[in-house]
Image 1 (cartoon, chains in turn cyan, red):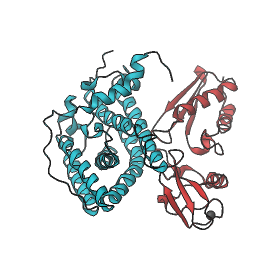
Image 2 (tube, rainbow over the protein chains, first blue to last red; image 1 turned 120 degrees about the vertical axis):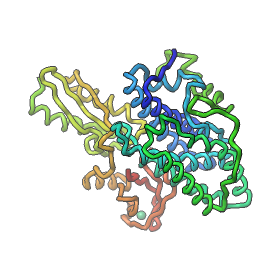
Image 3 (cartoon, helix red, strand yellow; image 1 turned 90 degrees about the horizontal axis):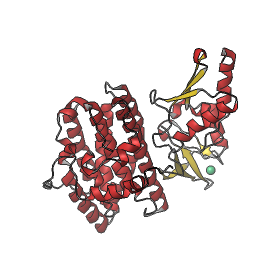
Length: 250
Length: 156
Ligand SMILES: [Zn+2]
């Protein structure tokens, strides 16, 4: 099956959907691996929110595209190079600090992005954005709180959190390399960038953590379907069942 | 042929469907069912619903339960439309519904999650244990006065 995306607005929505579903999959890997029962439940619930968000976004994209494909087909039948998520969210759960740092950097991005999209001229996108902002509020409370705790905790927790940030920060540059589609779809891209940096700096500052200058990897942009080495492994696990058993039903 | 009289009856019929996760309240009280429209010329009913949470595992189940309930009364030509706007909110829960939740041991949502009442001793001296609870819509709390652990229905 060759999945195509023709419409430019549909492509913008697919980028958001892909970022949601890939982060959801990463957090689902934490289910039964959380450091406490409460934390296990928290990460699984945030994962569920992200899967739900992705599902609604794929449906919006599918409708723009004339319902040629279903959300499941977009998720399970595209290859690595046909995915358009930000590389930040495909980074692995190396340790708990990585999970939290990735959440924090993503949540701040998602919060401003969906705030702007809640006034989008596409009413479906606007309505969904208003809805997901309520969910992002809880997710952001979680990542903000844990960043404070790990940053201000022990020397070990601070060092691990800083190490995670230094790795993940490499994948931030591409978030703000806006292309023509972004400029058409996102109401104020430059504001997205400014808000992201000021909010990240504020939270890292209060947590005794730093935003160190790190060189971005020599990799092409997520908007062209390029990924880090972790993406193929993630997809192989996520897509195995529906590809091996194409008629399988839940 | 669906008549106007039966149409009002449909709201009553659908209010017989309990929420799968919190059975003490029904889908009408929960605010999931937004419109019921009849198309007498096509002998058809259109039910418009809105999801509570985008990731709600009961999203698909809601639809099945509505179809099943209507079919049990002979309505087989039913279309369900899911709409996101206006965005579902816990503000839609009536005081009566919130009272039902409290009786069931679930502390109902308050504006901005500010005052959370213990369902057992009714004290508002409570603390959050975890923002994420047994379902996506609930947080875990405990009462500082009587030590009761309880679920709080998050404000959305
Ligand atoms: Zn109490």
